Amino acid sequence: MRIVLVGPPGAGKGTQAAFLAKDLAIPHISTGDLFRANISQGTELGQRAKAIMDAGELVPDEVTIDMARDRMEQPDAVDGFLLDGFPRNVPQAEALDEILKVEGHQLDAVLDLEVPEEEVVKRIAGRRICRKDSSHVFHVTYSPPKTEGVCDVCGGELYQRGDDSEETVRKRLDVYHVQTEPIIDYYRAQGLVVTISALGEVTEVTQRAKDALKQQPEAS
Ligand code: AP5
Ligand code: MG
Image (cartoon, rainbow, N blue to C red; front, side, top):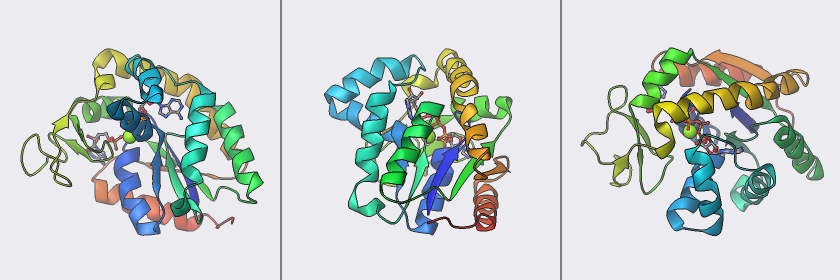
């Protein structure tokens, strides 16, 4: 299956993607995680992306699209993938359609995670992520690690993302409303959008997501 996850910062895209990708046996592709990996490796791409991410803005489309295309072309993604954080505006959605078309593929579903803004603020304020792999996500209250400050998965150090400050989160929410929300209408016109509430226990949301995806016919 080829699925896009969409939702505001802190909605739980990364958290849900980890479970859904495992369940569907497809890779979880997060452009945010790819940028963070480049930052920690000190690549040129990482150096370019860091200031933009810390300001809560979007990394330019050409850079992002090339990076996402390279990842989608990896052997583990031939039978499908779960995209998290890409596309993030209409030009990226159009580029994704083109990338898929070349291979004769289509998206199967766009899973839209709905969550009120006050919940987003609570989730982001308590989020801690792993320095070794930013897809390992915890929350000081809702999903604490077994040992404070240490990743349960790989033993890496947990830290608070640079773009999780109150001011940057406000900016990221603005960017989401103005630039990313329009992709929901873009995909709705293609009959691909399934919207679920992202409130409740993580396992409940995962179940809701699985049920919703089952309603969506597989395209390719
Ligand atoms: P990215 O890393 O994608 O950030 P985001 O979209 O803002 O989303 P988040 O990762 O903040 O939230 P999430 O929905 O994954 O929530 P999570 O599961 O962690 O992008 C960062 C930046 O990179 C962008 O601002 C941009 O600069 C750049 N970028 C990335 N993609 C780009 C693109 N395509 N184009 C241009 N630029 C791009 O959960 C949040 C917290 O809540 C966690 O602590 C978790 O434990 C907790 N939680 C999760 N679910 C629940 C639950 N059900 N109940 C209680 N707590 C929960
Ligand atoms: Mg995330």
